[in-house]
Image (cartoon, rainbow, N blue to C red; front, side, top):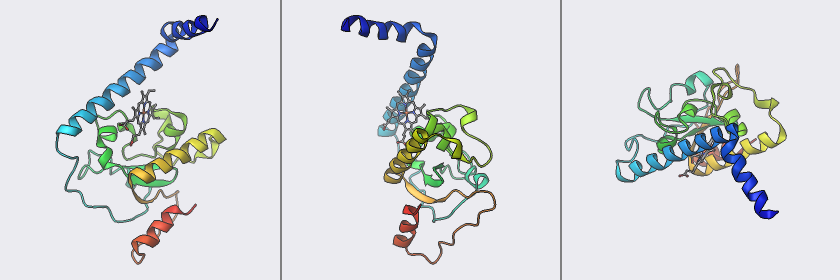
Length: 181
Ligand code: HEM
């Protein structure tokens, strides 16, 4: 029975059209990641000359300027209300990367629902309060992962929200601010 069950899953994986589409998407993303990483290993580091961005909060439209194509090629991305500098993850978020749709955008809904389509990445400020508990937990986990790997830039501002003045904050105070909420 165990063997039949296993075969059942395999048969359903390759015969169910939805599973086939999902498998192809995964294979494509994996291919892009592996290919991106291998060129990164041998090529020059991404944007070696970019200085660390000073701490600042930004609106959704300010965030859009940092899509890896405009200006100096810097890539910023928001996760759960926090903006991170993901330029060193250019293989993921650059224009040719598997997750390039997130560059200069708020990725929260896409990450929560494991989606990369246009509807998951809104042009306007996206209030994600409609996400369910599991999705919210997933966004928080992504946020933690990003905090460990990438530099925190500031908060993503809600419409009408005033930016924090970080100018007279020491680095450690600014870091504490990042850990708030
Ligand atoms: C289902 C097929 C998928 C496969 C096989 C796949 C595979 C991978 C792998 C292997 C990594 C780690 C790469 C590394 O650390 O070197 C990764 C990272 C990641 N994946 Fe996927 N992925 C898939 C789908 C998705 C989807 C649908 C999303 C978005 C909603 C997503 C978002 C991410 C993000 C944000 C990272 C982290 C990149 C970073 O460290 O900055 N993945 N994926």
